Each structure stands twice: as C-alpha cells, then as structure tokens.
Image 1: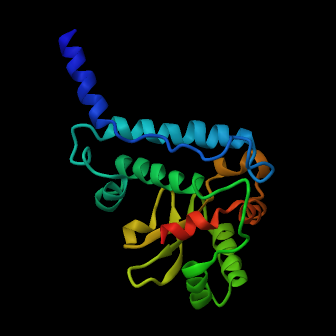
Image 2: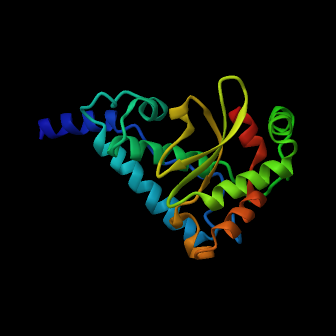
Length: 207
C-alpha cells in the first residue's frame, strides 16, 4: 500500500498536462459549431490526446518540458503527435467566442495583416483557400516569424508552426472530426462560418 501511494504521488506530479477550460458552454457556438461536435471534438478527441501524452512522457526526457518545448524538440512520432494536438486544440478552442465583439482584428495585428496581405479580406481569402486545399488531415495557421512577418502555414496531421520557429496565432482544424457532424464533406462551408466566432482580442494577445 505504501508503494502504491508513492507511485500515485510520482504519477500525479509528472502528469501535468490537462484539458483547457472552455470559456463558453458546449452549445454556445451553435450554429457554427454544434454542441455534438464540441462534445466529441473537445470532450473525446482532445481528452484522448491529453491522456495519451500523460501516459507517454513519464520517465522520458520530455517529462519536465512544456508542450512548446516538446513540440520543438521531439522527433516525429507518438510524443510529438499527441503534444502537437494538445497544443493545437488548446489554441483552437480558446480562440472562439459566442459573442463576437469585433468582426475584424485591430491594433498591431490589423496593421500586420494589412502590411503582409494588403487588407483583411485578402487575408481571409488566402486563409480560406489554404484551409480548403490542404490534402488530408491537418491544420492551417496564421503564424508570425521572429521578424514579425505573418505567414499562412499548412501543417499535416498535428503539425504546428513552432517547428519552423514561428508563433501560432490563429488555427483552423481541417481534420474531418472538426466539422463532419455539422457540415459533412463541406469543409469550405465550415471554414467560411468560423470567421463569425473568432475572438480577435484573444488572437491579438498571442502576438
């Protein structure tokens, strides 16, 4: 029994990755994202990635690293895939709001988009096109490099721009589980609707 208590203590210390707390109810993003999709996407898919990562890192070189450090340093494989998906989904779910106060970004983010894409509408068109055309499962990110330049980055599977030395700001999940219950195979329609729930102040803080 004493040994079991020691093991429990060690495991609880190492298992530091947890689910992000949604700042909205599971049904609050309807009709853009249904409660059913949130229940499965957040409640089951993300929870599985968190559980997997907490099972994989104990006793490895990654057990004391942050998600970002794991993503940057881990080779392709199970640890990277699950860490990437935990971070990706955390950024994804925390970028939405049921009460959008801004239809477009403001401040430094708006200035950077205008500088690098001409205007917000051009940026949206390029982001939509990249999201619709990414083959298979993956993510499309608005990311910022070390010089402050913005890039639209396509990533397969659980990839993240951190691996390219960039900071992820806004991410669109184009795995089918992100939209299939609501939009079936109409990925482009799903992407077009996401703009109505983006929390632009939250994205601006990531800069």
